[in-house]
Each structure stands twice: as C-alpha cells, then as structure tokens.
Length: 183
Image (cartoon, rainbow, N blue to C red):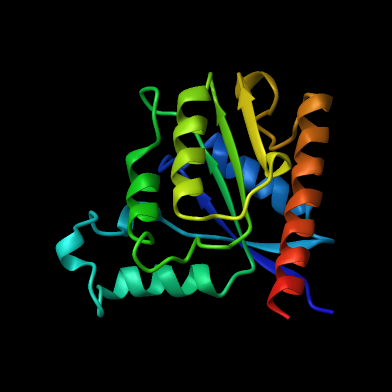
C-alpha cells in the first residue's frame, strides 16, 4: 500500500529556519508512515483579498488549494512572531476559508519558538473555526526550541523527540480514521 501524503507548511520565511529543519527532521522520522511534501514558499501567495476570492482565483491560489486537496494530511510548523502568527502563514490559511481545504482534513500543528503560546493558541482557534480535524496529540508546542533542536537537524531533548514521535503516530491514526469515514 502506498504511503499517505502530508503537505507541510512552514510558517517561517527564513532560508535557514529552524522550523523548516524540524519539518525535514520529521520527514525522516515519519518516512515509514507517510511521505511529507514541503510547500515551497508561502510568501509567494498574493495578499488575501476577499474581492479576489471568487470562482476563479489566481493561478498561485488555485495551485495552493489543489496541493492541499491532493494530500491526506497537513503539518504546520511555525515560529511565533511578535506574540502572534507569522503573516505569511495566516495569509495562506485565509485563502482557504471559503474553499474549505482544511475542513475535515487531518492537521498536526507544531509551534516551535522561544515561547510560542500566543501563536499556538491563535492558530488552534483559527484551525478549529475552519473545521480542521485535530486531536490534542496532533498539537505540540516546543518552547525554547533552540535548546531542544540543534543545527545538524536533530532533536537533542528526549522528551521533545518522544512528543514528536507521538505526534507522527497520532497524525497517521487521524489520517487512517478519516479514510475509514470517507469509505
């Protein structure tokens, strides 16, 4: 049976983002369970404008929405910026509100930052209102991330590594359960 596909959205636009490195590490840790595609660059999506969110949105938005639809799950890994959600990530999610790509879609959320609580709570509220399918086990806040993940792309904190493994297993179960519901 082919592996399920997960699309990963990185909330950071930095080329050397620790959040991107975490996604890459999870991609290796999860390789026996599902395949992770990383969305290349959320910053290339146009600014959300409800006037442009109609039957035929721009090519970038149509492609983004189709990519989300083509995957069985979504992994979001983001930092907290100025006590909130990074603008490019929120912008991307806003483009899916009317088209409902997140609705009933299994989602895992990792907020990896210095603190991260405000961003994490805000994103959870947004994902809930757009009907993402989540469990407490598919949500992970990694505060003080630089003390738990190194430049070589490895989790250095065993508790965090175990929490990531649990998140991977929970996302897989959520995708399996969603597949059964659709059958």
